[in-house]
Amino acid sequence: MIENFKLKVFRVTADSLNFRRAADELSLTQPAVTAQIRSLEEGLGLALFDRIGRDVKLTPSGRTLLEYVRQIEAISNDALAALATFGGQQGIELTIGASHTIAVYLLPKLLAPLMEEWPKLRIHVMSGSTNEVLHALTSHQIVLGLIEAEAFRPDLKIETFGEDELALIVHPSHRWAKKSVIKAAELIQEHILLREIGSGMRRFVEEYLEQSGVLRQQLRISIDMTSTEGIISAVEAGLGVGFVPLLSLEKSLQLGSVKTIPLENGPILRHLSSALLNGPEPKGPAGRLLELVRQNGVPTLRVSATKKHVRPKATVATTSGRTSEVEGAD
Image (cartoon, rainbow, N blue to C red; front, side, top):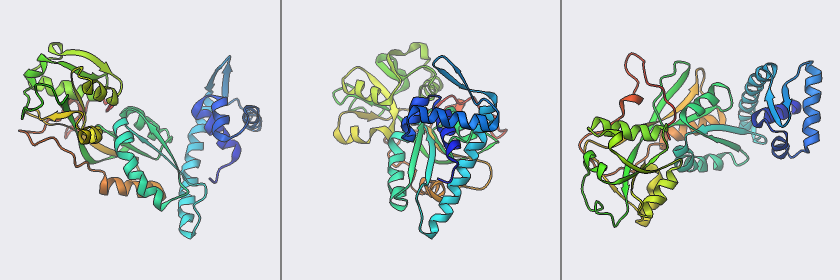
């Protein structure tokens, strides 16, 4: 990477707010990291970090410098990508952000061909909620975001590249396993496994149920979890029925450890979107990844066709440009 070493040490330390972790990432000793930061502060005549006991925080000047250092990093990567056409790839880095389902179940398939084209590429993936990914993009921590919810942001370019279904799953021995369709009202009869309160995935499900006449207070939510994998494992153990992204079910369906049941007035769909800063599209590996997303990112898995698609109102941008707050797509 074409980057001043002191600025790189500062950037890595600022991202982790931990001198020991920064030293590990940079393959330096902690005193060496401290010395580089001290030298940078002395050269600028400004304190960049507040050190209070074990807590480390950026000062206002440190936050300002970090914004510019991230822009320098992006420009350096663009320069290296342009030079790669002449045969050099050393030091090229790509930092992207993705919502959980995309990061775990979709992104690896897209990164494989990218790594074949750029064998020396170093990729950093930040996984988080939709809001966290978009914040990372606007603060120049990442160059490309892949999110699981619609969001109206005039300061960003957000483009839908596919849809994912939130599927109802049951254990193969469950009494519903052979049903051709489930009505929303039937769900109050069973223990339901959902993501944690406040997650976007849970709101999608609750919105579908409310549109179908079922209030969340009527549900028998026996367990809520912070991971999709936990819900799948709980359903496999016979602890109830659950809602998870269909993208996450490829292996479970192949093994026959769960079954999906179509929903009346379903399916529950959510948009998968890419997010960029306004301006020219990225070049090099970031641009190529964006091409791969557009060409191959649309999931093909679908539960059997049902009556109509449902997209929760709370997540759909209107023609007036208004949309509800998007907390997170997971």
